[in-house]
Length: 200
Image (cartoon, rainbow, N blue to C red; front, side, top):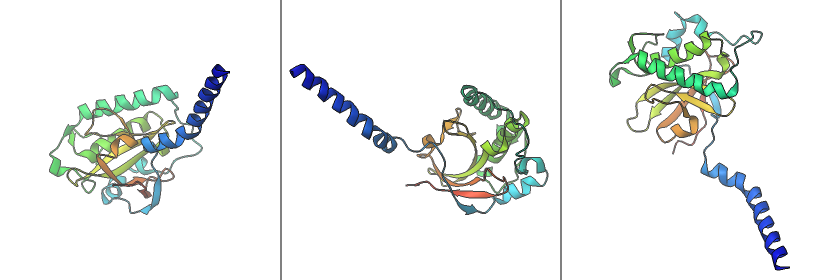
C-alpha cells in the first residue's frame, strides 16, 4: 500500500510538472520569434539602396520555386555566410556606421549596413526565399548607436546575422544588447514594421 501511494504521488508530481512546465518555460526563455508591429517608415538608406539594386528590393515571387535546405543544414549555412562576410569586408570606423549611410553590396570595406545587405544577398543568390531574409534596425543599448542586422526566419527560430558577432544568435539572445526598432515586411521588402518587444 505504501509503495502504491509513493507511485501515485510520483505520478501526480509528473502530471503537475507537465501541466505547468510550458508556462514556466515561457517565463524563463523569451520568445524566439519577432513579433511584427505597426507599419514603420522605410529607412532612408534602404530607399537609396533600392535604386541601384532593384532586384534586392523586389516583392517575393510566389510562383518561383525556391531552394529549401533541409532544416538541420539551414543554421550551418547561415553560420558560414555570417563568418565569411565578416571576414571578407573590412569594417569602417564605428562613427561611420548607421542605417542613414549609403548601403552597398560586397564592398572591400564598409559599415554594418554593407555587411547586412551582403549577407541577405548571398543566400538570395543561392535561391533562398526573400521572405525569410529580413533586414532589421536595432539600437545598441550600450551606446545608443543605430545598427543594421539580418534576420533569417527558419523553422525553429529567428536567427540574427551580425557583423558585431562572430556567431549567429537566436533573436532572444540579442535582447540584452539591442533595442529592436523596425524590420522589413516578409510580404514586401520595401515595407517595414515596428518590432513589438519589451525593451526594458
